[in-house]
Each structure stands twice: as C-alpha cells, then as structure tokens.
Amino acid sequence: MYDVLKVRNDFPMIQTLKERHMIYLDSAATSFKPQCVIDKVNEYYTKENANIHRGDYDLSFEVSDEYENARKTCAKFLNAKKWEEIVFTNGASSALNLVAYGYGQKFLKEGDVILSTEAEHASNILPWFKVSEVTGAKIEYIALNHDGTFDIESFKKAMHEGVKVVTLAHVSNVLGYIMPIKEITKIAHEYGAVVVVDGAQSVPHLKTDVCDLDMDFLCFSSHKMLGPSGVGVLYGKYELLDQMDPFMLGGGSNARFDICGNILLKNPPFKFEAGTPCVEGVLGFKRALEYLMDLGMDNVQKYGHELHAYFMERMKELDNVEVYNPHAQTSIVTFNVKNIFAQDVAAYLNKMGIACRSGNHCAKILLNVIGASETIRASVYLYNTKEEIDYLIETLKGVTLEKCIGASL
Amino acid sequence: MMEESLKRAIILDHYQHPRNKGLKDDPSYMSRHMAADSCIDDITVMMKIEDGEVKDVCFDGQACTISTSSTSIMSTLIKGQSVEKALMIIDEYYKMIDEEHYDAEVLEEANAFDTLSKQANRINCGTIGVKAMNEMLREYQNGQQ
Ligand SMILES: Cc1ncc(COP(=O)(O)O)c(C=O)c1O
Image 1: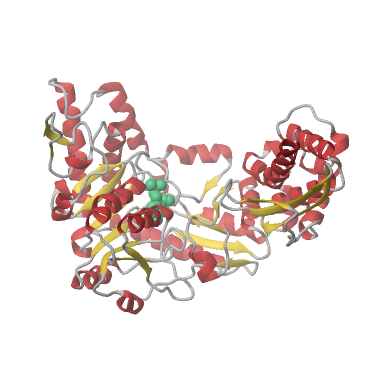
Image 2: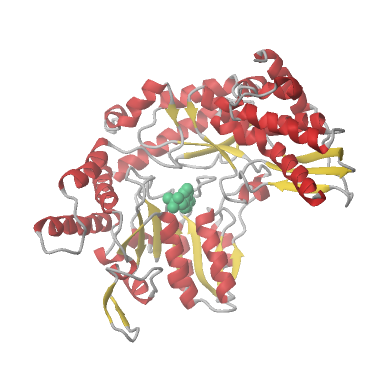
C-alpha cells in the first residue's frame, strides 16, 4: 500500500507549505526533495569534500567511488545494460543539447530528416533547429490529432527512408500525454533511425526500462524527480555514445594529449564529462533514485495515475473551466478559466495559496492545435493529496475577474 | 492610497473597455513590439509624435488585466501632452512602482497601481506598455538633439 501521508513526512517543504498556508501544484517545473537527499548534499560538504577522479588520498577515492556508484544506481533504475551508458550532465537541457551536437551535428547531412512533434519543449527542439541550420538536415513534424493526442498511424505515415533521427518527449510538458515509445522505437528502427527521448516529464512518474522500450537516447533531470538541481542524465546505447562527439573538452575527459594537438579521448561516459561536475548533486541524485526504488516505481506510477484521474474527474465538475488535456494519464492538468486570462487566474490562485504555473509553456502546440496560447498548468507528484486537489477545485469554483484583479492590488 | 474598490473598478473598466486600442496602418507612427520581456504578455504600442507633442498613442495585443489596463490608462494620460510632460508622468509612475516618493496628482487613474510594487510577479505586467511608451519618447527626444 502506498502511504502518501508517510511519504509527506519525508519532505521538509511540506511542513514549510503548512506554515505558509500554501499548496504546491507545480512539480512539473521542479519537485520537492526528501530529507535524505538534502542530508546527503550536506554530508558531502561536511564530511566528504574532495574532488573526484583525482588525488591520491582516501577521501578522494571514497567520494569518486560513491560518484561512480551513482552511475550504477542510475543504470539499475533504468535497467540499462551497462553503467558506461549513463552520462551525467547539468540537466535535461544539457543532455538534449549534447545529443543534438554530438550525434546530430556529427552524423546528419543535407537531405536527412529529423522527425519531431509540435508539442516539444524548447530544450528538445531548439537544439535541432541548430543542427538543421548547420548540417542542412530538415525538420519534419508528425501530425497530431486535433486535440493534441498522438496517433501511431500518423507516425507511420510520417516515417520514411530519409528520417535519421526521431526526437520526442515521452510525456509532453504541456499536455501530459504518454507517447507509445515502444511502438515508436520499433518502427523507427525498421527505417534505421535513432530515437531520442526527452524523459524530463516521464522518468519521474513512469517506470522506465530503456531496454524494453529500446530507446537509443534518453535525457532527463534530477531536480524533477526528488534530486538536486544541476544534475541530469544522458542515457545512450554504448555503441552510439562511442561514436558521438563530446560537447566540451577538458580535464577528466581525455586520456592523453600532446603539443601537436593530438587528443586521445577517454571512453564513454568519461569523454563527455570534462571538468569538475556537480559532485554533491550527483550524490544527492543517487539518494533520490534509491528513495524512488524503495517506494517502488510501480507504486509511484500507480499512485500518480490514481491521483491524476481523480484530479481530471473533479475538474469536469467545473462549468467555468476548460481542460485542454482530458485524455492525459499522469501529472499534468492544463486548463483555463473561461474568459479570464491565464496569468490573472494564476495571480488569484497565488493569493489563495496555490502555486501553479501560467504561460505558453515554451511549446507552440497549444496555439495551433487547441487555439489557446496561454494556459494554466497544475501538476501533481507523489506527495500531493486528493485534499489539495479539492482545495484547488473549490477555489476555482469561486473565481471571478474582479477577484483576480483584487489579487494584484 | 487609493481605495481598493475604486482601484478594482478602474482596472476592470480599462480591461473591459481599453482606450486607444487598435493599431494604425500609418508609417508616421513609431512602434514597439513588447514580447521579449515575458513569454506571456504580447503587446504592441504605437505612438505619433509631432512638433514635440504626443499626437496619438495606441496599442494592441494579448495581455492580462494588469498589462492591458496599465497600458490603456497611461495612453490616456500622455496623449496630447508635450514629450517633456509625458516623460515626467512616466517617471512619476516608475517612482511609484519602485516605492520611491512620487507625485500622485499627475498619475490620476494610474494610482490604481499604487500597491503593485508589493506583487513582485505582476510588476512586469504593470510596466510593459509603459516601457514601450518611455522608449519611444526617449528615442524621439534623442533624435531631436
Ligand atoms: C519536457 C521537458 N523537456 C526538457 C525540460 C528541460 O529540463 P531542465 O530545465 O531541467 O533542463 C523540461 C523542463 O521543464 C521539460 O518539461
């Protein structure tokens, strides 16, 4: 049994929210951290402070060991074949940029096609704009249904011999729909294309098995899944990582170099990790992964689905609200209060102690597909409760334009 | 301080019936598209200045209550004024937003935003259109020197 009240006790921010009379419905932006993660970061600075992969003393060896164990924990979390397939980055954005630069810019050429969707986060589409500009490869988009949902038939139609890279979010940050990644990779591989998965919104919520889903690359952030910010992961199949170029060169990524400019890079993952990384962040991230595995990702996923289904059900009671992603299954609810600008509603919700986000969420799909450029996004995670959702619903019932204006005075 | 119910009424009025809304297809107008400062409000402000006087101000765009009403109110305040007077009004407005000592008299309906400084997340909304006007007035002024 998943005991959300017990889980809440592990998060000091939940106590802070009580003191500030707030509820937090913006975990899609960043999640709270459990005490064990916070303690770990602290412990590094109080008991383990040394650089990794350097130094001839115990302290440095110990922390290097722990850093490398984080890689192993992450490989286990994703069911990756080898720990060498886990590259630590600064976050999902830097992992996505690394793939675009190190793989896309290296291997794509004029006439090749990058296939994506119009629902991508800026961090997964802008790097490919650059690849297109530099290589002459073209970006094509898979047609989405009129309500923003994805249809595998449209994907089949969009696939062709010219497609070399398929890049998309497993779960979109705007609509929260879950993409059928397993079917997508199967079809893409039949055409010889590689599949880059933006897992920033999926890995925190869904049990993710990179082998079963046969992803070529998967990028995500620690901070959205209970870990510290400043850390992300690029998972890549070893053969692909081996062929890829690093984004940065420098200390720690080379085995040797000489005065003539010859560089011998280390093997993956080390060739991608030049410079001192966010050591305390990686150690904290390891704790977060352990915490999630202790809860069981099956349980986290199940609770997330249940809570989200309850959220959607209750939203349907509201006549004054339009929900844009009724078919979503996890985490995200995107909506507007009829006839009130999203930002005004968000200001009112803020005044009523509810943290959620208004904006166009860096994806142009809403405008084209749904006809609303600005929306409010509420998102839930493993520490949210039905009572919190109830409070949001009651608050939305009473919202008026006058109250929204009042909230800014 | 302006009374809250009055403020609310002023803002609601300018939001629902914005003054000077709608752009002009006239090359003698200066124009500023304000979209880069925030990814949510998207406002264009146009201004016609002749012989040191603000002959016309107009605006359009997708925006929240605070940005629409503040732009609307400021357009009424500076339309028909000399460039110097318009800049003075805008300066007083900025002083109010920055919580400095300011002259409430010249701000008229813009006093509705006299506590906006307390709402950190809305300050950008309350200054986006005003910033466009300020930029155009200064550009005109610099061009005259
Ligand atoms: C779908 C998606 N991709 C990528 C990112 C970028 O993540 P980060 O800001 O942690 O690099 C986000 C974060 O909002 C996201 O939602």
